[in-house]
Length: 500
Image (cartoon, rainbow, N blue to C red; front, top):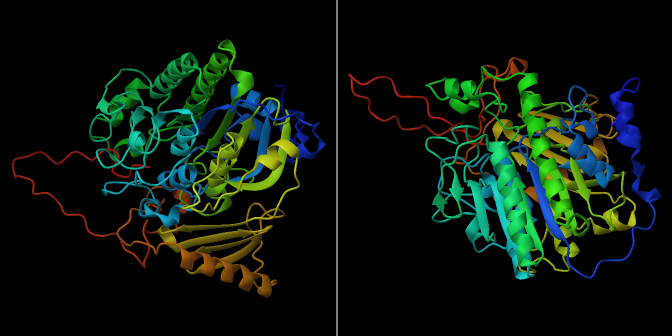
């Protein structure tokens, strides 16, 4: 890729980086292949909208992710189902609003014994029913064994961790959380590298079987703790009674964040090279995206807000699909889309369909991807318990509520969400709020015992007005404190109690 010199980031994204053409201008991508495609789903963790160079990151390069964009289609208005991890993963794997399931009310899933019900159809279970081999490498975060787990929800193979966050070298929260199928399997190494290597091994295994496969590669990068591949000493510091444990509020830097993202990009390159070397690349859909907006060191330009916030920066994510012969190369689309759209999209690509007993909230993007269909208006909804947040995107307008403050923005003209239009457009404001209320009434009610989290002024200086990270409406339930003997040393800070 060439330099961005002389071109502003807004011009870069508006014109389509790397000379990406609008999808409507693409040539006819060709007939549908007879054999269902393989699918490799690459999911980053806490990666912001502009944290890869093909979406505008200026201070480091992600050549392998950029290559996917050069050979495929970028969605420029992609949203996560939630501003936090496990809730989005519920929407992604079910194709439905996470608010329909108790596990989807956790923001994120922490210590409670809830999870994704094994009886609920999922993307891997539906593809498995259609004849696919299925595997997950990396992060699960939808409930722990024996009641929940990837092997109970459609995956044939699993290597990775069940929780929301773990140390990149020690692979711990409170204990080692590294599994091979249903057994603990400690293994030394930097987590991003292990995920890459295990993914390559599973591709080889699937290729020998000769049937189509669905491989989920769920990196924990660039989620905290802030540890690059050369930062084992930092891992030792964090795990030696460090305040906050792997939340790592006194660690990290832009340099460390760059090392984490570029190492993930390197491993993605190895996965792509393996597909090519095995002659699978022409028959494989590859998707790259993130589970929510960016965290402390992320670049969310041209948006404001971060993870745990329903501002655009907490929700907008990169989303790329490469599908040789079907998706035009170097294209971009302004179709508004959301994480839960991938289930109906990929089932249609596999000549399958969702379970009619579980109506979908997502929509198939096949016509957008393969035919250059005109963008369709969408109405999308979000809730977030922390700070009583609500949001609805309806066309170009967005309703937003944080605590008692409410807003109406045109997020196409005003992506920074600065010009509050609710007094200028009272009818539009009333209509979009009414839509939100009608949707909200169909979802499970907010659960005051659910986990929720967000930054406060003590955690982040730019949140100086936020006094706590719960709501006045639903204060945090008290945690019982275990007795400590007078002669015992102070208890060690739990590592990863907030596990997203």
